[in-house]
Length: 483
Image (cartoon, rainbow, N blue to C red; front, top):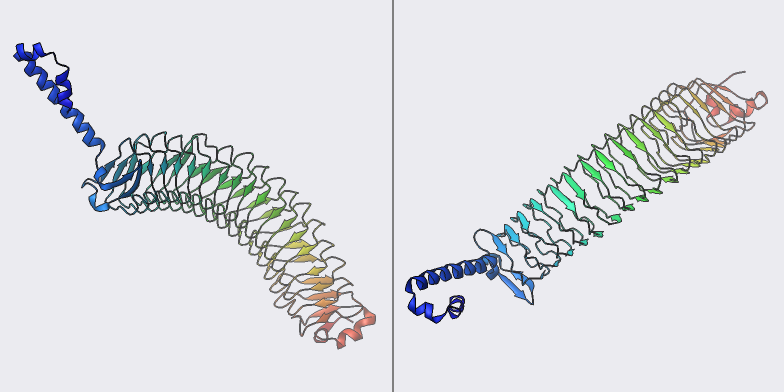
């Protein structure tokens, strides 16, 4: 019909009276028609494998995909439906038309041979949940600036995807969007406007080396960058308000981190296992350090905790074996279980007078710790507070101390002398077990109660008038009294 159309326009007198011109004209028409037909066929390459209704690709027949694995969509296609190409293992390349606006949930999920997605035009607004999940061979994709939403797990498991540029129009990034993209080495932004980096967004991107977050980001949710093992540098924007639990856990190449003063919440295990982290700048205004925040940061040498911090939670710095110096905040009131357990290089601590509560094992295993003075308000010295602090030489207890916990000075081999105030009422089991204690002073008029044994049989100095009572008391009677 195309050829016939051209002949209708041809004047009849030329057609019948100028045969040479007619032949040339016919030849040109045939060639033009052939070219147009070829273009029409190319534009529909692989379309026979598709079920399309009202411009929406509903399903692709994997067996009908051309042998070269290429499908090019016509401009009549406006959307890809849920799981339309899911598990099409023959698909290698797809060329989207300029009219596609939406890629549905799991649209290309499990297309393990898909290497490239091309011609993703500025018409695309939404990339659905799991749209390219487990596309293990996908090497590149250019996201247009029109994209406003990338769904949860959209590119999860795209193991060889190396680079991605998040578009200017992006307003919502889904959870685990790029999780386990093991070769992802570069993420850049074109002025992206999203405010939240969602949970596990880049979890397990083991090749990612640098992350510069855009200015509008307010929150980093849990595990957002966890196990990004090659990540060396993170630049966090002013205006950031919270860093979630496990946000950078296991980022073992991360060297330094500077949290802007706008951050008011730092989650549990936020930097747990960042084994190369040397320095951390904490924000003024932070009130709590959560559980395991810097646990096992074995290269961390120094930390200044802002004066606004009131509580250091369980195991916040446990296993920071290189930590030599800690500047404690003036507002600090609580140190919980194992906060500095295993900080082998820590030599001295100056605890502020506002501290009222200390949990068990706070300084256990601090093998270089030599001197400690406990604040007046710490009247219950917790169990195993100085467990195996082998270099501990001097401890000054609060003059209001009421009790010593179980094995509080266990293994303190350098501790030779200890003075207990008159207020002490109870000493826990094995309090001085395997210590180097040679002389114990106790001013209490009534012998402090002991459960079975406090692990010491050496010299004791007690009030002369009460010596008889001490000599009859449990555990005390096994000691040597200085008459």
